Length: 74
Image (cartoon, rainbow, N blue to C red; front, side, top):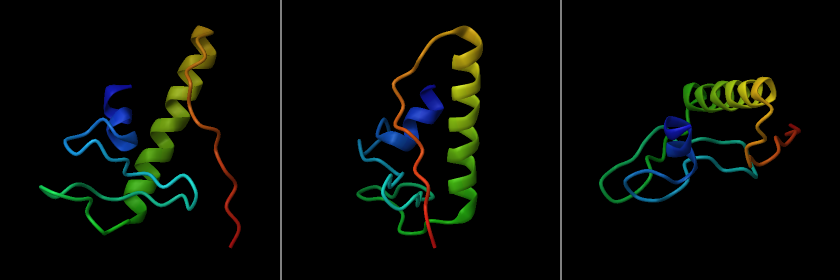
């Protein structure tokens, strides 16, 4: 959960790296801002983390407060 929270806003800049509206995910942080690159690897890492957390929560019966997944249309 701690590593996953880094994507949300629990990082050195207290800024989310995931854009819930577009599904984009920034690759990392500079000293004073988000990295402008939003590569596919970051999105895949974020989504795999989210899926794993949701699966573990279903197995344990614990319901974490995670935002629902959005379906994106091209």
